[in-house]
Amino acid sequence: MKEATIGVIGGSGLYRMPELAASAPVTLETPYGSPSDSYRKGLLDGVPVVFLARHGEGHRILPSEINFRANIYGFKTLGVERLLSISAVGSLREEIAPLDVVVPDQFIDRTRNRISTFFGEGIVAHVSFADPVCAELSRLMAEAARQAGAKVHEGGTYVCMEGPAFSTRSESHLYRSWGASVIGMTNLQEAKLAREAEICYATLAMATDYDCWHEEEEPVTVETVVARLGQNARTALRTVAGVVSRLPRERRCPCASALKNAILTEPARIPEETRRKLAPILGHYLPGRS
Image 1 (cartoon, rainbow, N blue to C red):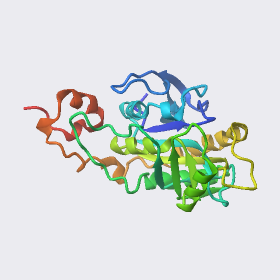
Image 2: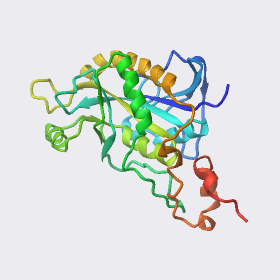
Image 3: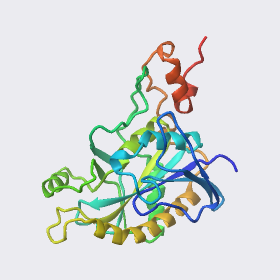
Image 4: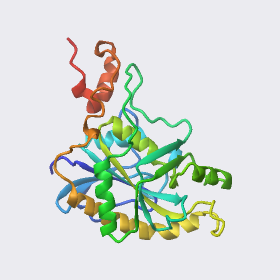
């Protein structure tokens, strides 16, 4: 099987992709530890795809416990160039109803103490993150979700909160006052790390509920969320298949060269161990030792 170039991260309710033909588990260890689970590598309509359950199969990993660096590093070493993130979210807008789909183009970080960079340990790099998702991939995802029958909201801001508890009412109203669209617990770190790894990244944010700001709705509960996850998962799988069929062979977006001018450290001063660790991500930018 040729190297996979498309990755899929399954969120709450999406722990496997039975549509993957000839799929096989791939277990990886990375310099950052273990990913959330084994990757599943297979073919979707003849296209190589790698799938990973963000919370592990059986949903056993809290958002704050996810090893984001290991997950993205693993996708990179498996040859993934485009990454589709499927996520359950709460709606912060009246017009985004439960079971609607949002393809956000911005993030607000409300997490604490999560590692969201591959850099450090003797190397400094600053990637551009003004536009945190791949515009081309996001557009294709929105088109595919519409074809899958979803009501799609293209663009919007995803608030990434720490969790695992849901928001207080005051927090929910605060996020609405900021103009945010949806709230979730996972995608900000994925987006940052994917950008550093020069992987295109886009989010399919699937609303399971109105966040607790909505006075005419009951406060969000696990029961409410679970009741809608199954329908959202079916929509997500149809959307992924649609994206795969639309993707052009070559990438023409800036994601593919995000590190080109980002590394500030003099190459000769980068520790050898750091070079080895980051070789899959930036080896082609660093000249060899003389």
